[in-house]
Length: 155
Length: 191
Image 1 (cartoon, chains in turn orange, purple):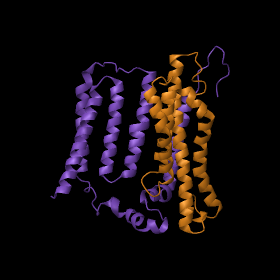
Image 2 (cartoon, each protein chain N blue to C red):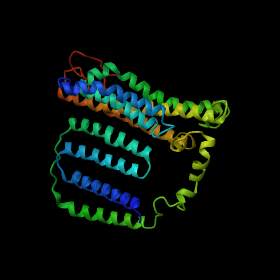
Image 3 (tube, chains in turn brown, purple):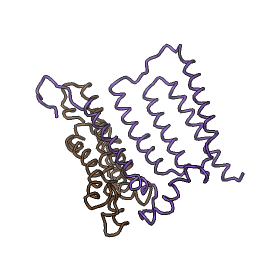
Image 4 (cartoon, rainbow over the protein chains, first blue to last red):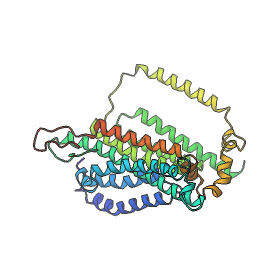
């Protein structure tokens, strides 16, 4: 997938859209407890911004902005953050994922715990979508031009 | 039957009819690019139905994942394979249709015993749902009860879902994430 960077309309419109897609993803992430949304949706929307960037400007450019080691670290960190909140609540004397002990009041603790685990969900979902997209796109690029270095580090 | 219920019923029937037409088109069309686009439309119609059923969080997920992410991934897959479906000798088409019709009839027959949509006496509304709706504001303090259930009351289940997504990404990395070794210039480029 070498991109469509020669199509000026796609290039300009995507450059205009991507910041707003990322902003909307962050809004859905941090506002999920007051309206519809949460980590799952936010992760996919945030990844959609990067997928659009990769589709227009090519996988190599996307990989410069978002290296494969970074997506893998984020993939693992999200799961660790979620499970880590559970371990911390146990260490603080509560049940696994019983957030009440995290804050001064039970409600405050619930709020802290939910924000943290939703962030973990968002990180893992974002990294999973990026991983799968880059794996498929990298395979396609390697098939089209095998000596090109565009798919240097997929996944 | 007042006008509001009638118009809501009409909307439901229209959406279901659209989904049926899309499903038949997906089964009939041989151009796989069109099939991928139609499956995105199918997900979008499903998301609209969820909005009508007042399940906005599910609709949000369906629109983002079903219509957005999976469509892109399917197009990525098409780039690896072919965008034409091979013509199959359709001697078994009638058998498949009969099986589908029988299973569909059994499902419709089974649904006749189910409680009506939104029935307050339904078992699903009697078990833990009253506690979630009545007490979640005092216990969790979030306006969106769906988030309270997903992240707190059922936090352990959600952790399992995150593990499923994590495992899926790991599987993709193991299967096709690694670059095939190339003979020329870049040696040892695997990570």
